[in-house]
Length: 106
Figure 1 (cartoon, rainbow, N blue to C red):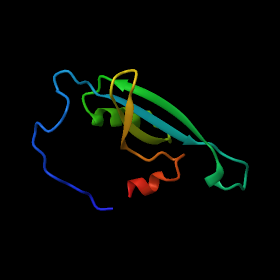
Figure 2 (figure 1 turned 135 degrees about the horizontal axis):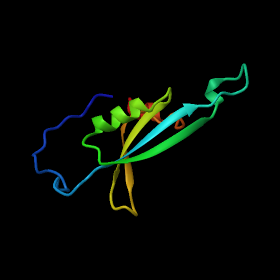
Figure 3 (figure 1 turned 120 degrees about the vertical axis):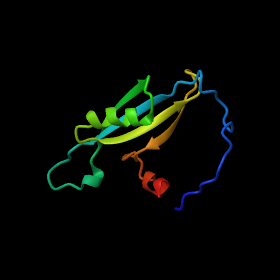
């Protein structure tokens, strides 16, 4: 899938930088081992999920994830909305438990 890139005006957003502090979520996925000779496509996954506040950028979140990855797969999300009604938006990575994720990323 080709990127759809369009220019925007600087003020074309709905929140103000002076009071908005992003909240990130980092999912670290590790594939569990199945019985010897079994198909890895059928093995399960273990998730360790973390909420990160106070990051100056997604790069800082990525650096934290990389320093704690220990062979796991990284998925980074940003949380949007009020505390009691958050939506998460994927910033990076692919959820290994969702077979449709590869198609979304292409």
